[in-house]
Amino acid sequence: MKYIYILQQAIIWIIIIYWLYQLIISACALIQFKERPIIKNKKHKFMLILPAHNEENVIGNLLESLNKLDYPKELYDIYVIADNCTDNTSKIAKKMGAIVYERQDETKKTKGYAMQWFLNKKIKENADYDAFCVFDADNIVDKNFLNAMNKKLCQGEVIVQGYRDIKNPSDSWISAGYALFYWTMNRFYHLARYNLGLSPLINGTGFMVDFNLIKPTGWDTITLTEDIEFSLKNIAQGRRLGWATDAIVYDEQPTEFKQSWSQRSRWTVGHMQCMKYYTKDLAEGVVEHRTLMNFDGLLYLMGIPMMLVTFLLIAINTIIFFCDGMTLGELIFNYAKYLVSTFIVPIITAIFVMIIEKKPIKKMAKGILLFPVFMGSWIIINIKCLIKPNTKWEKIEHKRNVKIDEI
Image (cartoon, rainbow, N blue to C red; front, side, top):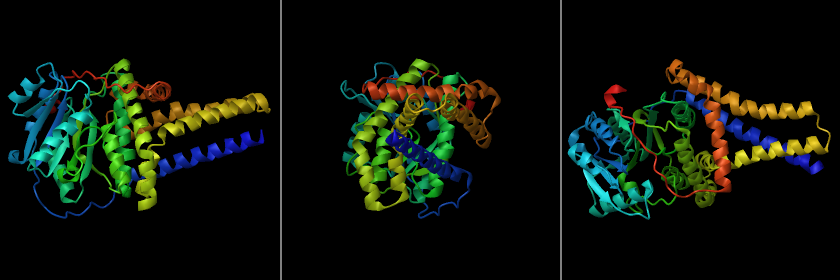
């Protein structure tokens, strides 16, 4: 039993150090840092890329919001990648002034493949753009988005994530769970790291990339989470990503648990794929660049392993209870600590985030109370994906009809 106790104490310290580190980093979201200086003042030219698969219900609202951007119209073009579409997505997009590229490939259906296919064409054309922005078809975009991203380019930043907000936060406890999760990530992950000079992550939609950056290799991603993969590849190379709080994009989130399970399962499998393909690169980046940014990027991949370590600690406590005289009270106390972190901390965090982000708490009351269930179900999803991962891409239906003027 001696070695069991040694392992128990080692795991406890690993967990304490890991979460203490996360807490210290997150606290930097509450500090106002000096604005980065303008290096070169210029109005850049953008291509706005919209990968879409059968999105006739929502793509019109996105295009309407992009047509209303407060940015010179001659300095941005809207491209829709109609990816294996069988509905009126292409027809609607053309009618609203977008340039449509139609793609048919039944074997490679993910957003990453569509991006790679389209951007390879633009690279071969040597298209006259300074940068590109990527949106999901269900988004609607704030009119100041391109001004904010143009400023980031002028400050010398080449990969920048915008503020991902939610257009249907109070539709159900599921969509509320997503909203609370993203508001927390926006403030305590992305902003906190940006303030410290570490690296935020690309977050699926509403991001900008300097076109010259990808010309040597194209959009070369292979996992189900092309956004995280692209982020980690750049961090491993020592490149810090940027963050733009005032470049706001509104995203539709699932309202039903079945769809949410499918989507979050895909994210978990994508995370596992990134662990497989990029842990070595990130570790080598830590050695080569010797920066906290590279170490922090490596630490991002440790989320699932830390969950497993926590379950191992629970198992060890149970073994000690049955084999070495731990009292029932001590065992209950240990279990209670895990329950508090799983169920109470998310509620406190959600309320705190809504206060500092100035979100309406009253209409989100049900979502706040059930936020621990939302986050707890993610643990079950992680376990299921570890046992039986599904690498097949499954579409999430979007149908929430919200216009930019209604936000």
